[in-house]
Image (cartoon, rainbow, N blue to C red; front, side, top):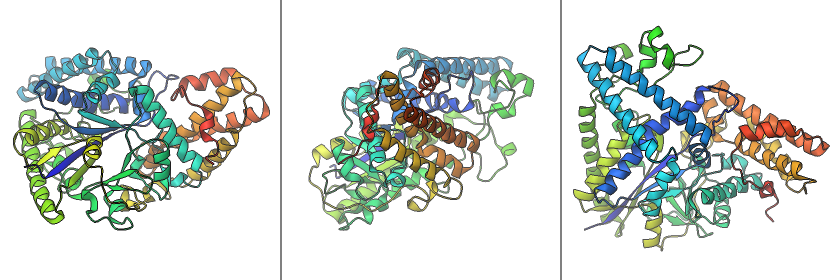
Length: 529
């Protein structure tokens, strides 16, 4: 007898990184790695489930920057070349390796990348089309996010800026999928009081927040995070379940740290002889990760030089064990919750999609096994996606969520601290200027293009990824450069529009570089009253 619902939610997002002005930019490989290691492996899982007649249910967010990049012909062409180079590398590895285990692993990668190539070509390089088929079959619920993943609580003093992040995202989603989204993954799960009114006004039915956003709601929700709440605006809110999240996320007890799993930080790009690996690293000769990794985690705290060779066979077996353990724990959790609550609970387990495959190589196998084991081996809970759950359970408690995020300490500190606070006065000034520009009536087509490009540049500057990277301390120069370049372009546009001195050649150039949201209307920043 089914006594609960399990909702697996994957947040698929990357910042908008596209550099047509350069033949090679390392950060573009964030997308290529995610395609190879996360998005195509997930599609393989979905296709296998459908082929076996399993009516799976899963929720994914796909952010506008990610959708834009996956749909972009330039990036599709560059990914094709990237994959060809990967295939050449592992083919060479197979030919030159006499070591039995290394040859076995090289052959494994030859086959894996051939499967990636096969699926990539099957969909003619357009993975949005690939994912959309599962939306159309109601197996996959794809939701939206902020237009550029802007951190909304730090924009709340400019409601028009928050509105633009929401409205542009919804319109972009509809152009990609042919229908409006039902829900939204708030960037960084960051919520502030009053945001739900805008979410309702833009036509969305639900959003996700961290667990404490629900637990500290007023009045306090009777069922905690194990049932959604409705805000007074009519929008539903789902809270993250701590227990199931910890089993996967935790660096101490989470599954991805198991010794038999693949070691992320030991890559052929850093290990191989320099002259041999040179054709496969950066054009300037600097080493980088290639995605070809031969070693397993082996043990906690070990030096990388002590890592032992990886075996995908045993790693796959371990992924099956962990899926069984996760399902077993959810069964016990549901039995307890159902007894205490006197109703069917829902457990919402949200994760970054790139955890599955990119950071945790075996993650897609885990998802595949979890769905299959949930389907065949138990009847305690049913897997659902969030839109289906709301359709089937329309009556819930009304409450006001608490301000929250899923970042460090649960609030806004990770995106506002000594490493990144300098960006906000500039972002706020740009927002003020954009709101002022939105009241203009353009004198001609050139000014209209400039106004729309100004809106794009502000949105791109607001991406929470840049503040996040500054805080983590990785790729900081790139994050700072992107923030400054978008703000610089915005301010140049602002000055030129007001002076009537728009440089058409320069404008055309930045339109070609920052070509996200081709249908944007700068008037989205006009007063909400």
